Amino acid sequence: MSTKRICVDPVTRIEGHLRIDCDIRDGKVVDAWSSGQMWRGIETILIGRDPRDAWLYTQRICGVCTTVHAICSVRAVENALGLEIPLNAQLIRNLIMAAHGIHDHIVHFYQLSALDWVDVVSALEADPQATATLAQGLSNWPNNSAAHFAEVQERIKKFVAGGQLGIFAHGYWGHPAMKLPPAANLMAVAHYLEALEYQRRANRIVAILGGKTPHIQNLAVGGVANAINPDEQSALNMERLAYVRTLMDELGGFVREVYLPDVTAIAGLYADWLPYGEGVTDYLSAPDFPRDAKGTDFGMPGGYIPNGDINQFHPLTHFGDPYFERNVKESIKHSWYQGDWTRSPYAEDTVPHYTDFNEEGAYSWVKSPSFADRPAQVGPLANVLAMVAAGHEGTKRYLDQALTRIAAITGSAVPMTALHSSLGRHAARCVRTQVLYDMLLENYDALIANIASGDYTSFNPPVFPKGEQMGFGFHEAPRGILSHWIVIGDGKIKNYQAVVPSTWNAGPRNQDDARGPYEAALIGNPVLDEERPLEVLRTVHSFDPCLACAIHLHDNQRQRVIRVSSV
Image (cartoon, rainbow, N blue to C red):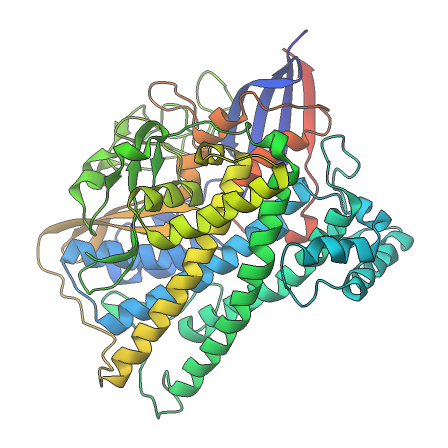
């Protein structure tokens, strides 16, 4: 058969501006190109500014994952200065990171990805009682009742009767790759709507501790700006902390009783999709949730796994780890910047040089990172595999639960190697959410205990010596390892680079023309209808793309296929 080229631009239900080009032959993807379509220039804006201000600028890189850039930025400056921060500050940061991570993962699955697998229109055909029977067989969630599902079904019917589907408009409903029975579709739509409320509760935790969200206001190089006094109304007191605990308890039920059952049910019912979406199997993640001021003891481990073999795991052990520092490089061979180099972030420049899309030359604003000179996949799958390799008990327990649940539906054992797939990334993200909830509990208890001991310190003032300092900060953000790299000269920023998760995953071919993770994961994907490339979107969305711009939830279904042509 002839080869057809499809171009999807923009890919929506992501953050930012992404274009995907695919060559389709015999109903499968045989080649692919991932192109970031917007340049912000935050790194160049920072040159010459005070390093203590960098976090306020960098968290504007993204309208959803704002906390992660703020935290990574202050860590970069602190590590360049060799500055330790008080334990209270570490714990408050950890609480913000855990709550934000849970929020992000819930939104990613329900609002950004689930509708690649769930047919909303099919939910109109479901029997609410049959839906309740299905849902109650998966969990004890109180809203898994026939009455609740009937109410949700009526809401959808009103959308349809009004001539529109509202937030569910423009989906690929009725696509031949949609295989869930009506009852499963109705259950998933009901939980989609509930997820909107529970992600909001996670965000309230971020707002209480961070001052606001998005774009938290409480960070500072040296700690946090939260004044701590159990009895003072204007400080972080016991009343506010008690409310945080209430929100945590409400959030835990949804994470355990809805998110986990839904992900594993969809994975089991789409078992034929477990072989698709593998791609790059070198994995990189950061340790995080530091338990000490120096960042040498972490609640969640991280590291590097080459060739998908957890027996070759190399841990990252501390902030400033030289193994990470010397192995991270970025290439601009296929990016719209001046030059053709592969460099450490410390030595990079970011000089834009746009040309037309050229699949053999430059075709993306995204740079191409490498670890040990090879592409690496980052994200929850990388993090979960690293934690398993490190022997993290909570991760192993939750992963076993997830694989057992999937196996119960498929009727056969599901090996851990099945995680190297589009659905595997969703399963890993769900597992990581369970671990994040444990981190939320652990760090809350530690903060309460430390305050009760009489320690109210939350900030150590930084000192900027003469001369040059270099440092990087890493953070295991919801979408994967994030690192900020800074060169300081006489108290001013001389160079600043951010190597973000979607740079790792959405990057174009590297200096050796090896495909980036998006591109590699698409190879072999089935495509039943070139005009409606649902299967392409399933794999791209499984990474949780973040191209550093505002998200478009009110147009969250339209995928514009602008071209289908013969090659």
